[in-house]
Structures are given as structure tokens and as C-alpha cells.
Length: 213
Image (cartoon, rainbow, N blue to C red; front, top):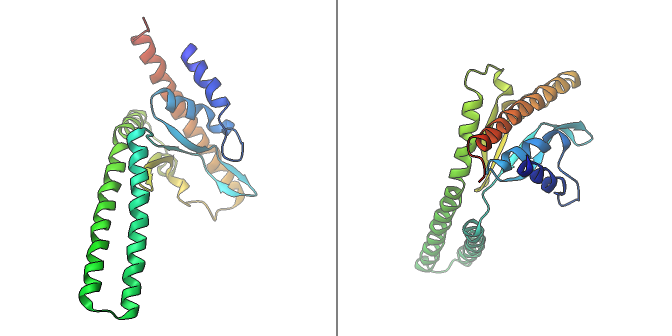
């Protein structure tokens, strides 16, 4: 419990860029994921308010020196791609010799390939941690029967983040009446809580099986 309480204390102090703390409805999910080595970056507990119909989600992302350096390189190369594309466009507008345009386009293509390889490397950095979450979800849904839209799923955002949310969060009920939206929000929050309890069970089972010396 000491390690768990330390994590509770740590994430109680975490705020977003606006100084807002982690939503109460998703707080324990965030703690449980991080306790199992699955690093979270952003989250939302779900709301129906002036911001609209928002359902619960958690983003995970591996952040280490290698991934940060790859991100820096990716930004630099992306800027170079944009610059070279503008140069090619300018050459075409000036109607310069075709060989000059082709040479410039070759440089663009080379940078495109460099950026593509960096993108793959960044995505590869996420595999081990994402696979850990996939394993947890697979075990959670063994024998568990819930509606299709209620199930928790993963999908990639950009080239490094992975979002966990309910299937129905993909605008299944965006245009539904308020009472249906309220029902679905409650169902999806309950599914996230059930998964959180499952994660906590894994965490404390591991501590029982492998007690600290």
C-alpha cells in the first residue's frame, strides 16, 4: 500500500496546462495504469456540459530520452520537408528548367523518406507499453459480456500517443437525446471503473507474489 499511496499523492498534485487537476472520475484509472508501468499523458473523466458530450478516455505514451530525441529529429525533418516543398512550388511558378525542378523534387522525396523512417521509429518506441495494456484488456474481457459500444478499445493518435476509450466514444451517440447520452456516459464510466478495479487487482497480486525484500 505504501507504493500505491505514494502514487496517489503524486497524481493528486498533477495538473494540466490550465492548472486543473485530474478528473475525479478517471483519477484512479490514471494511477492504476502508471502503477503497472503504463505512462499516461492526458485524460478525461467524461462530462455533459457547456463543452458538449465528452466521454471518458486516457492517453498513454512512452517518454524516454530516445523517444524525445526522435521527436526532435522528426520536427526538424518535417520543417525541412515543408521548406523544400515551398522551393519546388516556387520553381514551378517561375517555370525554370525541368531538370532543376526534378533535382529539387528528389531532395523532397529523400526528406519524405527520412521522415517516414523516423515516424516508424517513434511508433516502435510505443510497442512494449501498448502491448502491456493490450494484454490487460484482453484478460479483462475474457468471459466478460458487454455491449459492443461499451467495450474499451485502443487507437493511435499521431505517431506516439495511444488513446483508450469506449467504442461508442466515436460519435455513436453525439446526436442522441440527452437522456440517452446521460445513460451512455454512466455506462462508459462504469466500464472504466470496472477495468480500473481489474488493474488494481493485477497490481496488488504482483506485489503479493513478489514482495519487496
